[in-house]
Image 1 (tube, rainbow, N blue to C red):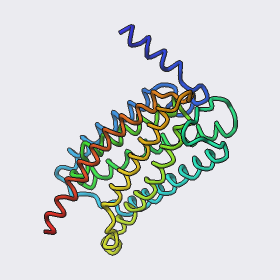
Image 2: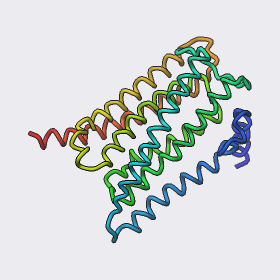
Image 3: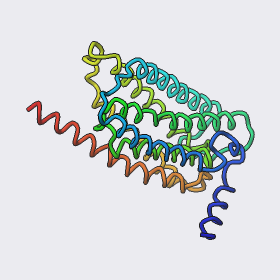
Image 4: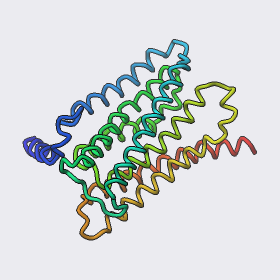
Length: 261
């Protein structure tokens, strides 16, 4: 136990001092408590709704998804602007841990990205109240939970540098995804035009591949000061989550093709 506590303290001490007292960043405990409440809420709401009619939540969903689009697109633009102004390299960009205004601006938007990953957990709550149990899959819960942890770790230790690429691309993809969900919530009159749902999953898969490729390039860059351990973690996580999404895509759309035949 002492060994674990000792190593925990070492890793916490290596965190970025600039973000130490920002919301949720001093220790991982608030984040883990929120995730615990998230898991418990899913179970609790499903039990609560077992003998009740599903809520429609149409107006709330339209507003929620619209705000998600705005927030995601803001993150995409802000990260891109700061990266361009800072003349970031696409192959090797160490984290600037100084109080340089642009470095602080990048750390701030990455922290906002972490907060939005917490907000994303509302997706599952909506599914639960609408009794969409088929959408509360292992993939869905794992992806949402793991992205909260990943984004927390990113801000805690690598709030800048190469991390910008993942955050920027992921936010762009999310702005498109939540745009689709918002339109879908508008009802049948709009849904009939949303024939491109399966391409969202394809877009996510392309995103994972591009992010992993970017991380692999960094891993093999000699004398690059960006921590390679995090690039390796990006690749390992990317391989696992890509396999889950490929499995989902195969099950979802191979069944549809069989029905059409």
